[in-house]
Length: 626
Image (cartoon, rainbow, N blue to C red):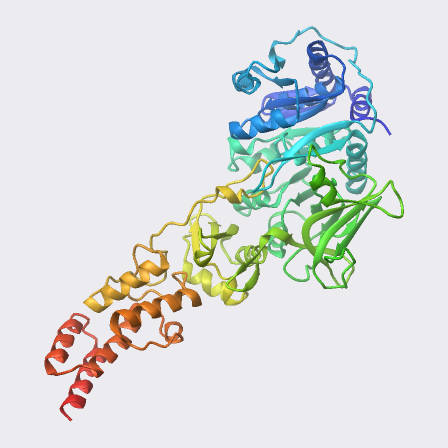
């Protein structure tokens, strides 16, 4: 099996004048890209020799990053891509952890690279290298088993961990992908992922090892408004992104767009729902196929599930389908035995083409990569994803193990809540997390992005969720967002989601301020327990994020303040401050010591102009005189 460089140079010889990469006005043919990569390779070898070692790359998403990637590989090195938008502390950690001696960048990012180098590491700007045309390939011998790249990934939590992949693994993955989707040199691939993540690396070589052209769109800079027109203008045939980006894309469509060249929509990264398939069916032609691609960075692509306009999805989630060649997918229990059909376990992948493990993290590597008793060439990777086998023998991924959390004694799957939210009309993106500094303050918070000119109505959302989810799975707070923060991978950056504001949520009832002393006292109790600045007397306790624990706290404080017996269930049956005021007043009137107390209470209630409250006073007066 050849190295990545061997395969790329084969394509150069076959398709020298064919477009290789395009980003706005910048474009290179295969021959031109090869010359630029050779120039970088000569510079890298001149600076650091031919020793097989890591080289860090610092670029923005674009053509220069691809040139540098190929150049470093031609120099026989292992490339370590870094995102210029990441915090300095993270980049410093990567530079130190990967043990590189050299950073390759361009003039735009040279100052940042110098700061990272700190005078201890070499820095090369590809803009300053010899511009002499280099038709002769700069080749340093590379074994297929040598490390091609080291990508740092941490999801949304924890210390970044480096995933190592060899030339052999990536070449095999690209071949399987190309064969499965029948990619050919006439295809034009979108490149939306950053070059610094697994998706970006896969996209780069899916194109360049197959003679196709890569078309780069920088979402971070360009957004999504002009994206549909760009797809048509560049005649993109294969769209590839994580599912949150696909939802953003569809959200800007008006419904009358046509994408005559688009034949494949490939999505993955997170759970994919039947509502996503509905969006595909609504906006794209019958000639376009929708594909759920599954494959962690540690394994590359291991399965694909193809959907057309006639496909029917059973249930909420889209299956990941059957495994690709040379790969086995299983769902295992805690004893690492296969679970029965329909039971939930951890998704595990058995293959000869797994990552060698995590860079300088032997314990984690040992935990996640298991040796094979039958064949030493194989290993099994424990993905950390939960899944089950459906009635048709397909694997369905249910979300990450770490998306399951315990709240008030109930095990809750956050991805299931997100799926239910996405099933509500006019919600285009959603993320649910657990918030609360103390155990007793923990609550579910939903972050929601609605379609154009649609306001977030908490009452309607809660009503819709209550039809699909048990009460413990309905979030306590809802936060309207223009867009969800994302990692470089395009996945939601859950650590960057803001704390919910303490303002009153948007409800379908008008705000009415407290009108009496009793209502004012009750409002203060509710505000303190629910952690809200403003509450109207007709606001529903549940719509304000109330639950059984908060109900207990409110009732306890009401009993202490007014000496009234309030049943816990009454807060759910009559769930407003106005309702609770009647209960408190009824008790106070019934237990009033004399007519002066009754008169005082009447004065307290008069501002309400509430006939029921007046009758309570009259009834209590008659009881007292009797």
